[in-house]
Image (cartoon, rainbow, N blue to C red; front, side):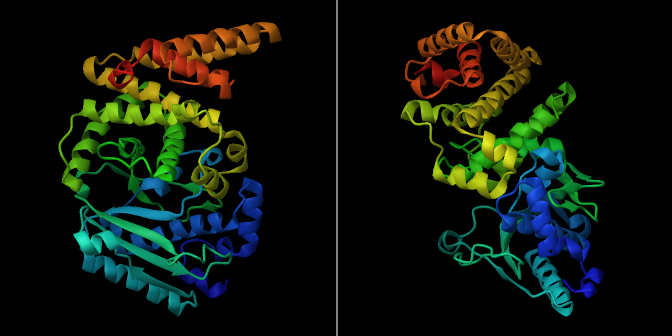
Length: 402
């Protein structure tokens, strides 16, 4: 990349070279260099947008979530989500300005406003504007796609109602940020992502598997990173605010916080047990692809069906505890997470013969509480312990009726 680019780009021009991307991908254990290159450009584009929009544009979604995680837990992100109170005309001016400045500095790019066919036919159901920003990537990027560039979603919201913060000294995969992003804070990032799992009401539809698993991954590591009681209490307040904003934004049918959390619990339990109902240990192809394209090597190797299930069940216990806390300010259900880990540590301390007996009895306990499950395909004790704890202590209404 030409030295001249330093005057227009926020990040050093060396960051965008094939050499840096190859080396960083190797260190991080990323299979696809294209993913890291896109990820780096997502933050560069956000820095360019923020330069022009100021406080009128707030980073959210996956790009925001990664900034609140240690590098070891981060994944690549392929698109950019922003909340804004700017007008469509102002957004067009910003995109044109970026393109114009890039061109003057020999960075070849283009952009279009992307309007999905459903929107053309039925009109907008969500106050949102989308652009596709295409760049001359060093590595091929899904050339078979009609629009292979970076998707930028601007969600029109009242920014006065949003909890935002400046992310100082941000670091993400392959990049030390050379600017200070204005982003939705970590608590609202978690509460917003929780709502995406309410697949029967306000969240992603069940057939959007990659989106569901992506949010499960982010939530699991966010909640493990901010696992103190004070964060738990703040999120209990934010989830109510996020629900109200989501209903207003989508002009949706009002639901209670209890209905929302029941919906999320249902999604998590079903996702955790679908392989046990289908007697299959294989992950869906779209999830295998998601792992290969966006995750670092450690998690590509370890996140099999059992471990995805364990992550879902961990979140289930945490969200059930949130539900109880909202009722009576009692957070003792959170101890269930420690109880499971203590039992797992005990299992690991056993000799081989005792482990077999422990596992056999554990399977019998789980089957007695949910006879529809077929446990022949799993021997993962952590997964079984989470299931046993849930079925013994926090079986909600949709499971009681099974």
